[in-house]
Image 1 (tube, rainbow, N blue to C red):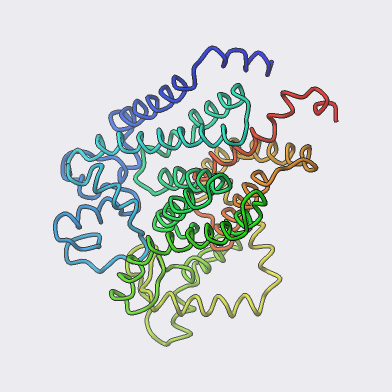
Image 2 (image 1 turned 90 degrees about the vertical axis):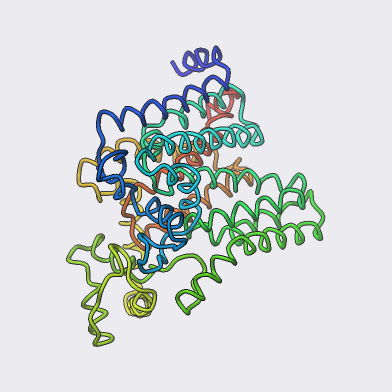
Length: 421
């Protein structure tokens, strides 16, 4: 049956598969706008409600930048510190300038991000020597995955993060071919990723073992490539860090929120009410107030983070349990209720089982790229798990998860001897 599926895929050029996947995203987005229009903060395109549109506030910030030049949710509002600028820039380009009908423009922008992501996945699969037939299967899995289609309708950062993740990996792996040539764009992509979500901030350090272990490259070039990656990533992030310093009078590399989300995770994972307010009042004697929903002032978050570090020292045995529960919640988030958790689990658990199965089967023949991908995915999952897995963030790693799974399965489809192991 699997061979029959591959035979069917052989009839379709990869370009047609990618084109169909992008077209489906556009059709789905327009259908959602016209027929569903929910949740209402994502989609309104006309009438009095358009100014409230845009999940997570990125669109509101983009509109405010156009109107008053302020990085805030509304003109005259408090500066925003926990929404990095890449998604805001995308909303500036794709939609903010057409307030009442922004969603139409954004769907084309979001589809463009998906197109670029699929093209990079194709190049990455080719570089990893995945067979043409399995490359087509990979493009079908990534192009038509329900969550990767569904997420394109929203204005959150996840679609951009999915693109930047595969771009960082592709450019990073290419450093072994032309170290300096690819180190510069790899560093720039990591910097852009950091300004999309804070998990990218450590990418240069995570890339170091891979770069330094390239024995086909002279030691001097390896060190130079790693240095260029770090410098280029820092150069992209530095202006935003300076903006934060001059705005909030403290060093904030990208965003704050570690303290707030640590204690939010405490409630989400172990039950009970959110403890942030009581902890802050007890520690400072001052009233606790949210700057806006889901965020506190940077100085308040610093207090909560200090308390979090004390908690980790006092209860180190809770950290493994936190990571275990958070990892499960990452792939089956219940922020949207039991139905969302079940739907996510139905799609994610089989993929996880396949990935673990093929990792076990190929454990003696894993190459450096596959090991690097595995460690990168583990880092992202545990980074979210440690603080709070609250949202469909697993979607941003789905292309890489599918890529790794297909790359592990590929030799088994080509080598009969391996099938019998």
